[in-house]
Image 1 (cartoon, rainbow, N blue to C red):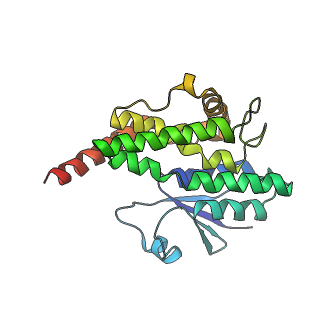
Image 2 (image 1 turned 90 degrees about the vertical axis):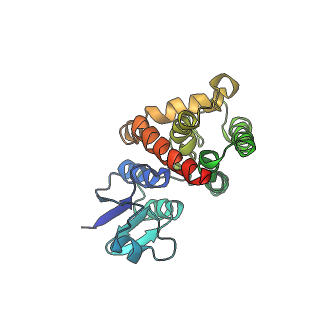
Length: 223
């Protein structure tokens, strides 16, 4: 029987992608929580290049980077596929996954910004939401790929859950549901799936954790 381990961090949107994929596939695994400020020797051994979570270890073999991990999971365990079978549909899905991966940095950009930098970060967030609304989401479909969740939904999950926490931390409202009705419907559909709903980091805990970190960051800046 395969031995599967996942090294993650409780607040990481990348780690949750892997958790959801494993659970959707019905794969049993051992979860190892990492302290990002005091990384374990095993994590550093398994991911010596980036030294980051998530890392999936399958029968002793480490796989790093969440999108790479998800594609590996989908190939090893083909049940409940995470990508479309049709070559064109798969290519489109991979395009949007890459697009989403390239935008996750907006979480840290807004978190660290103040003054004019904050305004620029908000502008980028609104541009992202507009692209999702106008180009990525298809009217009448529950998810990015149609009526079933797939890897694209997981890639954009930082918008569905982490953005709301970040808005609370920085004291701004960026996502206004009435301006982005397709995105709003998608968020509701995505977070209503039992595997997703039952495996999300607590928003209040994340908010308190992030606010404390921002206070420290601002204090260091002022010094």
